Image 1 (cartoon, rainbow, N blue to C red):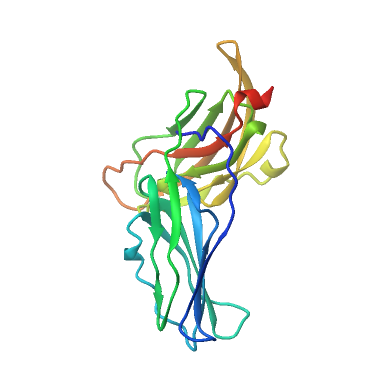
Image 2 (image 1 turned 90 degrees about the horizontal axis):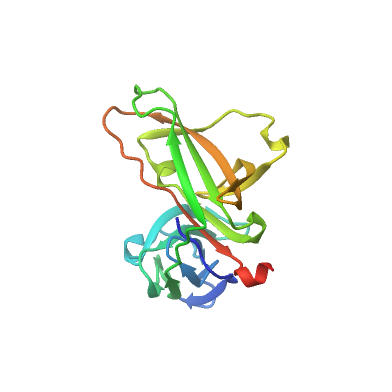
Length: 245
């Protein structure tokens, strides 16, 4: 689990338009240009061409892990298509989203600066499985708890990354709790691009006030065999101690 030690401001960068002529273009922009390792950010590309172009070669994005969200979605404008990708920097440094080709037009490169976040011992993630031995098709409950001695109100830009939620070896379901939204102590959390409801608790540990947020997912294995569940990570920004006083 990792923590950013300072607040940062996100802004969208207009990466520019690569013009094939006065009416055709590919316009790329990102939600972030300064990111931390482990942080997910979005690349949007608006393409105007006479017909739907082939999808770009995302293999060129060697500095990033890429998740395709939209490929050639029609927009409200004629002959205009939307492409959207979630990106995660693989290493720190000055990185580049290269020009991507869409038929006769290409987007401009986008510069990204990626930094390493700082770890903290004031937060931790715990995960537990209801069982470590199940049959194919038998649900197993994965429970995750985020502990923090930082007040949750001082934490911003929370980003949980759960690789298991994209694991095709499992069917992922929400635990049925129809009244959880109305329960006192329920808090919405961004988890792997979705919103989940977590139960909030306050407690003392080593004479220090702590808070925790707990949520669960049902995993249903589709195949037999030994399956390793990769660890989850948490990225967030916390106000410095002097700013809390």
